[in-house]
Image 1 (cartoon, rainbow, N blue to C red):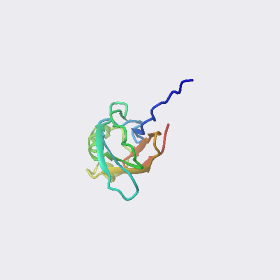
Image 2 (image 1 turned 180 degrees about the vertical axis):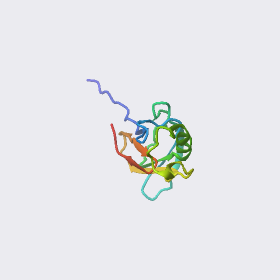
Image 3 (image 1 turned 90 degrees about the vertical axis):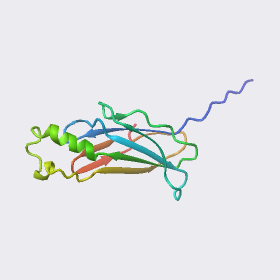
Length: 137
């Protein structure tokens, strides 16, 4: 009788961003990943990537063993500055301060708890004046 053991799955995180004001993925947004082992521990930077043309960040590293909390930092200010220039004609009915040069949310930070061996997909639905996140699949 043989016993087969399988290695435990690594805890992993993925994300994508949809710009709901434009109805398309948000490309070129830098996403930083940090993690900690325990509620009171300091966050440790693990890596970063930029979203691709599909709004997906595919190069985030697996989480170290013992990770209990993860933080994703989305640097959206540059994205909105660039997209405001590209979407000015399409957004004629947008609020007047949309093109004022001021980004209301220059960054979005999302911190969440994780369980070892699970995969967490955390999409960001984004617009110039609000955002929403959820645990996807």
